[in-house]
Amino acid sequence: MMETKNLENDVQQNLIYEGKAKKLFTIPGDEKNIRLEFKDSLTAFNAQKLGSFKDKGAVNRDIASFVFKYLRGKNILSHWVRDEDRTVMIVKKVGIIPLEVVVRNVLAGSTAQKLGIAEGTVMKRPLVEFYFKKDELQDPFVSDDQVLMLELATEKEIKQLKDMALMINSELIQMFLDIGIRLIDFKVEFGRDEHGKIILADEITPDCCRLWDIETNEKMDKDRFRRDLGKIEESYNEILNRLRNRITLN
Image (cartoon, rainbow, N blue to C red; front, side, top):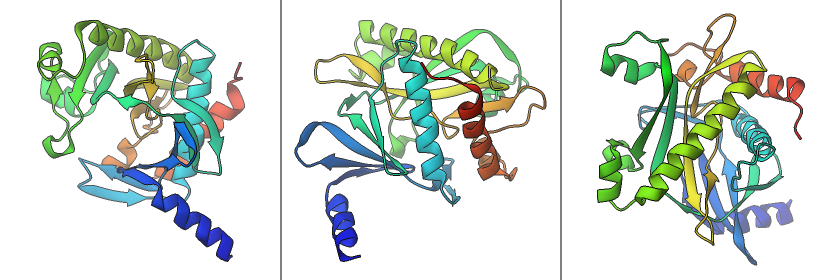
C-alpha cells in the first residue's frame, strides 16, 4: 500500500498541466513523450457547469485511443503512442497550436442559433472554423487573417490545418456511419512535433463531437450534459461498445 501511494505521489509531482478533462505529466527519463490522463469530470459553458460520472476517464481514453488507431490505419498521424493503466495514454510531446479547429457537417447548438438556421440543417459542404484557445476570452472565433495577425500559424499551416481537419472528417464520417451514428460536428487540436511536423493531438471523444443516432436522432454526446437530457454515461458507453463490436482496426 505504501509503495502504491509513493508511486502516485511521484506521478503527481510530475504534473505539468491540468485542464477541465485531462492532466499532463512528464515522464522521468523520457524527453520525447508525456503522460496524458483522462479525468472523470464533465464541464460545459466554459466550465460554468460541472459534473462527472464514474469511469468517464476510462471510457474517453478508450474511445480516443480507438479513434487514433483507426485514423492511423488511414495514414493520419496523431500524438498517440500507447495506452497505460485504465485512464492514461502515452503521447508524443508536441507544441500545441493554440487553435481549436472545428468542422461542421450539420448545423447544431449555438452556431445554428447564431445564424438563425434550424438545428439539423445539413451543410452543402463541411464548414471549417478556427477558435483561439484562450479560456479567459472564452475561446473566441478567429478568421484566417486574425490567425496570421496573432502569429498562431502561417498561411501554409492554415491551409494544412484545414486540409487535415477535412481528411479527418471524411474518415470519421464513415467510421461513425458504420456504427449507426451521424457525425454532426467535432473539434480537434494539432501540435508541432520535434521536427516541426503538424500532427493530430488532444482527443476525439463525445466530449468534443456531436454524435446523433442515425435511426432515432438521439444525441449521444456531451449535449446530453449541456441540455440536461440524462443518460450521459449510457451514451458514452454505447459509443465505445459500438466501436469495439462493429469496427475492425487495421
